[in-house]
Image (spheres, one colour):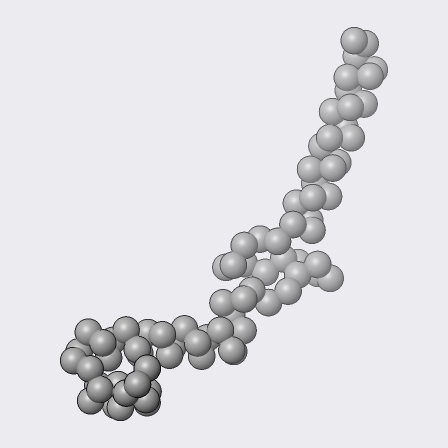
Length: 78
């Protein structure tokens, strides 16, 4: 294979990798830049509230049941 073909393929692959890195989501913790980014799921108010309810439910269950659930603002049936 000639160097001209090989280096051309490498340049195209490198440009594709850079373009993919610019638009690929950065995971749950970091926001992608510019027009490609969106708020991570864990940072939305609905998910934050759901995570707080789940943590309160878990804490109430560990601390002894319905009385602790009432203090945490949960219904005892949950």
